[in-house]
Length: 189
Image (cartoon, rainbow, N blue to C red; front, side, top):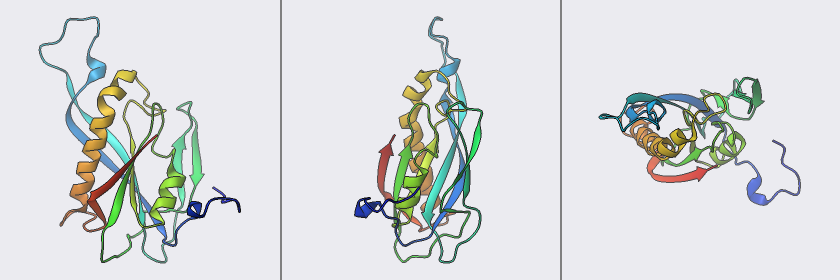
């Protein structure tokens, strides 16, 4: 993205370098809404499955971070893959700080993907936030399925990812101390 001279002051990137990582999460034992036949009688037991979720996490990176700054995403047709170029360095070391950064969660619409607001995620991370953006299974350009899955699962995905991010930030977690999981915001798209 290019910042035009007429852009508002807060549109400018912050001073922190930015890293990005892909996280794979599984929300176990969820109701499989797509396996329920709406024309059939209500099943005795709801079908269940382990729901996979891919999350992209942008965060303040250690000074001097360098490396790959591209992201692979699919267009709306669900088959055409494109390369997006940003500022975030793939798998950069997180910045060391005496205080935890606030966490922001981005949740795309139907259909969409976790990269729709990558420019905003980078911008926010450059200002001292950690941003987690979810690929909602059955709601992405590549996995688009019946809208009922989105209605049932989107808010459950959000809660699950917030809980998992809290675990990763807790003492002993992979990102211990990086962000404050109790200080969160949600951006819906």
